[in-house]
View: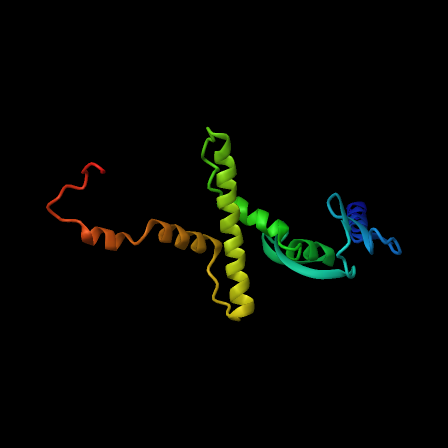
Length: 181
């Protein structure tokens, strides 16, 4: 039992080690940072946008077998992970938004140009949403921002038009299954 605790403590110590190398003075690649950390497996980063490396203490809920309940657990996290996930100039964020509500997920593309068309529409929608969020945060300084789903829903409703107005123009005596002209 004592040996198992000792091995567990050694694993925790190994997880906390960070190896860093900084390349300075190269005009082609200024301030290149190579970063490696061992979590459950090795994690490697290579960045030119890194401003500093340090450990951040974070907390999350985890299931504890001894207590048989979820408890708050503290762990160390490198700040470069958050920098990568949150401020990668929007590239990864755009890809995530594009993949969340894909239009062409269920469609078969019979024509070669159809894939290009659908990709363009999806990129247009993602860029419009990112512009909407940025304009609300920076220009109008408001925090009332629609979710990505609600934004897309509003666009679809605008493209389809207001159904209530269309139904008001129909004659109630006329059948709805008439031929189109």
